[in-house]
Length: 320
Ligand code: F6P
Image 1 (cartoon, rainbow, N blue to C red):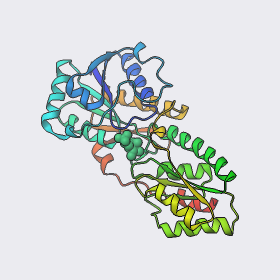
Image 2 (cartoon, helix red, strand yellow):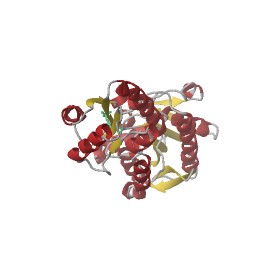
Image 3 (cartoon, rainbow, N blue to C red):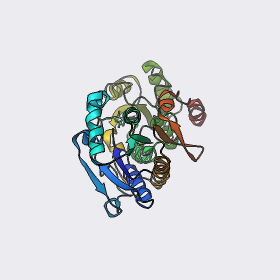
Image 4 (cartoon, rainbow, N blue to C red):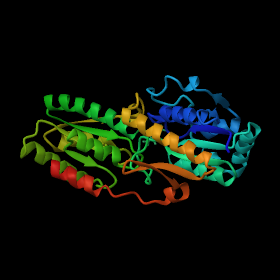
């Protein structure tokens, strides 16, 4: 049976990563497995920035955002030479298997390491909810709460000044933060890669909201990487009765104490990851599907098409 495992966080941090580190560590220690924290993602693995974790060292972190292990992006990890150095660092310490908490880029590294004889299990840690094999990723719920809180506040000030707030949310080409927050905040318009962005059409809809529907304010939620929201806000001021203001929520969405849902999700997924490693299984990632924690081959997960969000978009349209 596996005796020593490592855990690392990689890619953009997400609230709930600490809860996942804690779960992996405590479930493993309670099963007689030693646990090592690998600092700063794959970079720390290559550099040997690796320390044992104890039950105490993961105490008082379940409520903390960010990741106590630090995170990094290391595109060079796709080079065999770099990975060979990493594997040597693990072997030197007798670490046989790893739990990788991160997004799909991190999963690619986990798969490559598994193919080199180090069993890896991936946990979906990203606010973007862009890992297609899971209904929810760790951090999504917290980021969604952050957005909703911010947009609710923007609505207060927008309605006092007859303004249109254009709010850019993260998601890295996945529209989930936008569509979920749009529904939760009662936004007037949402723009994602699924809706597409026809500037003139959005301006027309805003004119209608102002002139026909007599709205005091309007909220437009736009996924990042679609348009320059500051430029668009100027056009709203020029071509509609609202004065346009853009807010880029940015990295605020990545911080904060994880919601109870994210803490529980991280704990359930962390437990499953350790159970798989104890069975000598690697090359898989953990998902939640219909509230059941399951595992999927990383290779399959990386090639799975994204579920359509058509029903959510239809719901949004029926609510405006
Ligand atoms: O993947 C998480 C994420 O926050 C994306 O939503 C965003 O596009 C990206 O990371 C930002 O990356 P960085 O923190 O490197 O600016």
